[in-house]
Length: 85
Length: 292
Image 1 (cartoon, rainbow over the protein chains, first blue to last red):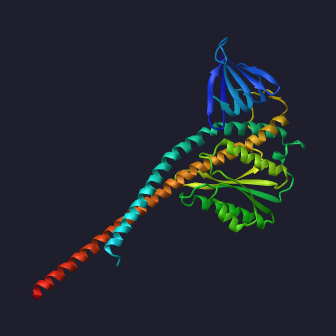
Image 2 (image 1 turned 30 degrees about the horizontal axis):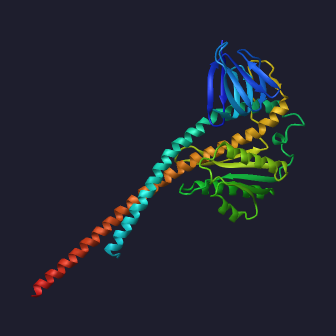
Image 3 (image 1 turned 90 degrees about the vertical axis):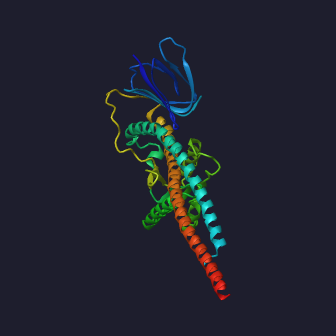
């Protein structure tokens, strides 16, 4: 019961871990991704990606700039041009 | 025959040259490791982006209103060659190999009756290309002021290229850069970047589910194409960085070894003339003593 989440920038693979839920600021509104999400693709404008490690835990925020999110069979992949922090 | 003093001076000068080349070799070896690590770290992003591109492009490719960066301008008369060179020398034949590949491609295109223009990145390619094609350079990008050309530089280059493409300055762009294979081998590589070549085959999503797009497929693709271009350029910048250090390491290793050989030869010559001088002196003394 975990979502495989990857955050990748051109410089490096920032995150690759199993988490509970990730909230991504899509270009047409925020969306949360849980395990078993339907295949989905969206552009991501500048904003914060919130990562919930477990159910009910406090979210960890990562600022991303210029990105792209893809949900597929193997989890969520966020491709960002820049990541802060 | 050179005098003893002259020989000594030469030996010393070769020795100090050897010290420099040895230092440069070690610096290059250390930097090479870093550059290689950076190139490896960039791979996941590039491969994921390529996957996404492939699946999107195959969906949009048939449409008439596909983005121009993917579909091209419809003709193929004017070519742009984006040549990536290093800013510094002391790296053996790396730059001349790239320039030779670029010029060969340019001549081949001209023979087909196409017009060729150049966009240069890095200092070292400018002079030889200007000599061969004096009026064909329409732009250059200076990477000499930044320590490690990175994604920001790639972004700027990509923006400039897209501007020129939108402005109708060229129809097709090729990128020429060295692929780092090992410290000994860096092959010049030619790659089409604009219009973005359609990936050979789309990776089929075996889940069978329909992928939802937000906003539409074409909007995503329009945003993705420039990013794909940036990634390609970024990859090329990383390759040139690794190649430069690799080539430099090999070239400096050779130079250090040559200097060692030269020192050995000069030392033998020096010792011979020293002995000869001593012998002559002795003969003179003996001859003088006998005369008495």
